[in-house]
Amino acid sequence: MATGIKDKVAILGMGCSKFGERWDASPEDLMVEAYTEAMADAGITPEQLGAAWFSTHMDDVGTGRGGTPLSIALRLPNIGVTRVENFCAGGSEAIRAAVYAVAAGACDIALAVGVEKLKDTGYGGLPMSTVGTYIPQWYPNAVAPANFAQLASAYRTRHGVDAALLKRAIAHVSVKSHANGAKNPKAHFQKAVSEETVLKAPIIAEPLGLFDCAGVSDGAAAVIVTRPEIARELGKRNLVTFKALQVAVSNGWELQSSEWDGSYVHTTRIAAKRAYDEAGIRDPRKEVSMTEVHDCFSITELVTMEDLFLSETGQGYKDVLNGDFDAEGRIPCQIDGGLKCFGHPIGASGIRMLYELYLQLQGRAGARQLANPTIGLTHNLGGQPSQNVCSVSIVGLEGA
Image (cartoon, rainbow, N blue to C red; front, side, top):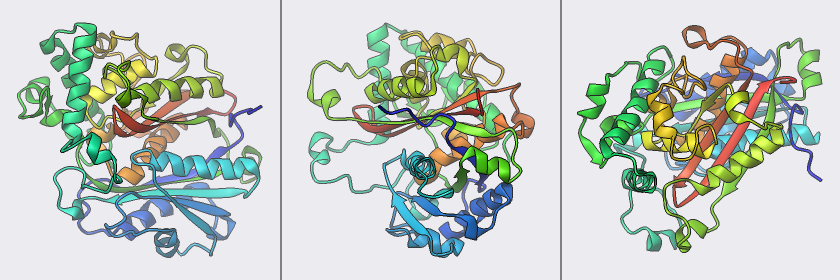
């Protein structure tokens, strides 16, 4: 019987590049930037690394397939490097592989790095990439803003929410994240915005306006993991350990049956339940201190808070408007600014989210620091509401 990952692996060090329009930096430069910070934080030499996992999605934008781009950029000591890809959950998958390798005893210290260089593609949004032979037959001409606008419409219909009230709620999501991102020197967008600005912004896909959509950025993030006893031997204290790492992937049920009404994300609910069970969390609304969720669009964040059982079903918009997920609220969300302010370098996002929780748990988040967080949760959603890969990861102070 599976016993889970709780407290078996600790974070030894982390690093994160500056996110944004990094015209002056190559993917290799971004990886080195994140890796150098992570290695200094961990206090180890490259020869102590046992294996590495590399997350990148747009392989034709300066990285390529396989593990060599990471090994060459970082001059790794000929250790095994595995490239992983699972849409927007790729970074979390790289973390999961590194953590599982350490927990299994396959190596003592492992590295996970995620990078994406999107601005060079020339696209205003996420670049097009192959989705296989059959998916276009289900989604002819579908684009991400339209797919998530449909999530908003279905949510509004299912729960009888006034359209203007829901528009105000998703506007508050963006206002909150921009307020947080304004305090983060590594965020792409470091400027607060008003509710009026968000509400009056041009519509991209009704009801989603310009400020309801995450930007496109370049960036990289890195994490080094080991077993707690090794971390202590290396002089580390106040360890941040993994409590749960869960992934749920659509099997076609949402799209191919009439049971799913499109108002929620089925896989998020499954992954969340599994993660809480693995972490031993019985009441997430009381036990989770903070979250970093996949806010590709503001409606995604609102619905995700319900799918993570941090709001009652159909009541998330009220919690958002009440400020429950603001920096001073019940469960702060996107305390670093989220995808809204960091953009979405696909391969790096999951590790960037973990970086913020790690800083917060160690009391090193500077102007963004929360009061005494003990448990943090990250959530990635790759794909669209009707067909996707979802990851939920939970970390916390050792023993919490």
